[in-house]
Image (cartoon, rainbow, N blue to C red):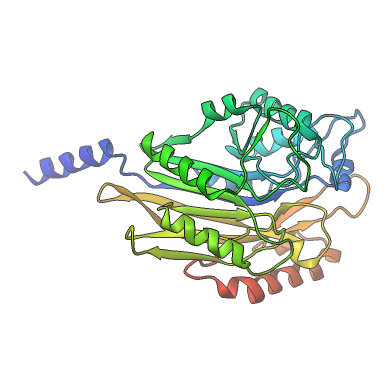
Length: 352
């Protein structure tokens, strides 16, 4: 009888999708001109395979991994700051190392105007890379949203918004999802209507290079918690900002709030911009509803090339043995400042 009860419980749990879903998030995947040059091969192609090799295992750990693609795929000529256009092979490499969802709502999405945004969407589609945040027109947005992924029987919705586009206006029919509370509330409601059990809102917000969130971020975070979302994941400041598990009394659940994960990869030189945080978190069902559990972060450093033929490489905090001797000082400064000035303000989000 006891064995039968255990079997019945297992069947019920299986039918309910009572599994743990693992998610990974990283920040701003930039492509400055020196990065494009470092990746260029003699035949004119671009090879990014060295860049992410030491983080690939962590990326693939997740059932779904999310990256902010902060550069249009607008075709040649390839350019860096201030108006980006990255090679298509950059997106392909991000996919190849395990990223499953690309965020495109950011302040650089219109760097090459409407044409660049459209080409980015078409290219990601051709590479079979799911993406949210920008759309060729309203009809395409209506088809793509709400973006709900069924992972191990759990239906999770992902949304993406940006504060602006560096003052570059939309000229035609393209759609950029901006930070508008009514729009966000409507999208959340539509996601729930279509069966989302958990909701992750990704935000391009805040002030660049600020190590703490500003009032506008805190206000919007409060609004989203009140809307009942489960994950609030932020980027844009190019530096890491604090993270917290916040309890929502109204919904009787914890909400993971990440203000900024900093850069994923870039050529920026300020010490606080020389790396970023990877956020790993799980969702599991308790009493029939998803619960956010085990949030943690892992820091990494962007080692720049020293000479021709070298590429940019992301070095995990736990692997200083991978560093060149000339990078050791900057690595140590970035890690110390990030832990002391930022992560010391974390609430219930520890280092992995």
